[in-house]
Image 1 (cartoon, rainbow, N blue to C red):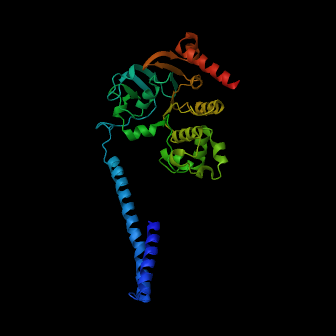
Image 2 (spheres, helix red, strand yellow):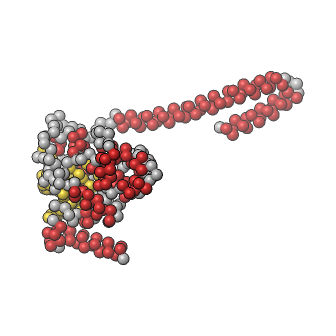
Image 3 (cartoon, helix red, strand yellow):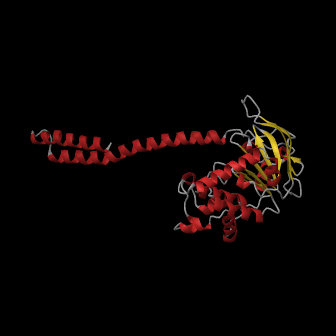
Length: 336
């Protein structure tokens, strides 16, 4: 647009100058014409910009309204209520689950009891159904009625907002908003987060040293989807966000996959200290995460094929023992 305006001005100067020389136009008339033209140029350009901005805004608003007007697939049941007191026991009863339009079920006849205040580890190969199983607990997908219970109550009878209050969930794919580290951690807290609460949550995920390395500390902007942070740092911010609300149930969906072994051990130690009054569930392909769990289940093609403690499963010499030996060998080779 600017180049076109410049070329037009040169052409007008040439044409107008010739007419002044030939006496068909006075110098004053020509100067006045060029002055008026200059006054009209910017508003004309601005109109084009405004129209462009308006069209882009209208398209964006259309997409936003499409989301705002979308009907949620998962809603509260009319009789939803909250039992008191809340302990955090989780139970699966003959759970079968199949994704919409899928040919076969992903989970088959899952029967499992997780007492309040205990730790469960779910291990298995990729595609065994670990993520699907833990995603059903906070109702990210809706399970069949009468298959998943919290404190003896069907989770479909719990209000969704209450489930979000008692369940801290760290997903496999970490999502951070384009805001500060503080605001991302405080996102799940209903009250203003104090410095002491922030410090405790950060200590659990072993991220204080990383935060101190940033010039602005917890006020550092993480960028869109946390682009300024490494994969491990993003996962640890997500862990802090989950624990800061002091949930009764804490779920990790392969949430330590980008964290080094040393840091993982420190995080597991911190979680063990706070696990006495909450139910903790780990879904992971890394067996090292499962060793200290009160109960371990092994999933294979959506079925529980083994269950027990680390020692009992190692003595069984089945799938768990094979996965454990394989991963220990891989770590030894990587270290050497």
